[in-house]
Image (tube, rainbow, N blue to C red):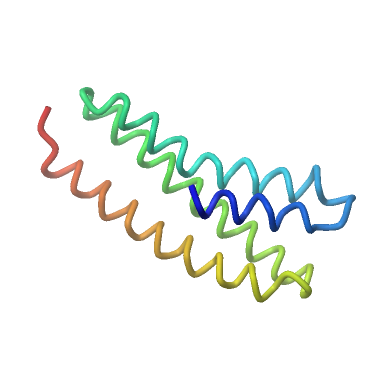
Length: 109
């Protein structure tokens, strides 16, 4: 959740004309990363549903990384903080992927 809150706060520093464009997109995708993990865990009894939501989470993480890269290139004043977020999302994405593989191979209901 910390990543989402930091991303949300930084997105509000974008120029006004971007608040409802790129800003909205990064807020939605970053929220989706955690939300899909939570929803999948709620369906953990159904392994295929759990896997599906972990895949959604990983995809949302990749989408968030893409938005961060756009912001870094378009708004140099936010680049330093966004690069830090990029590293954290990259590491989090690796953890999601590893957990997804674990669930696929070893999860028992």
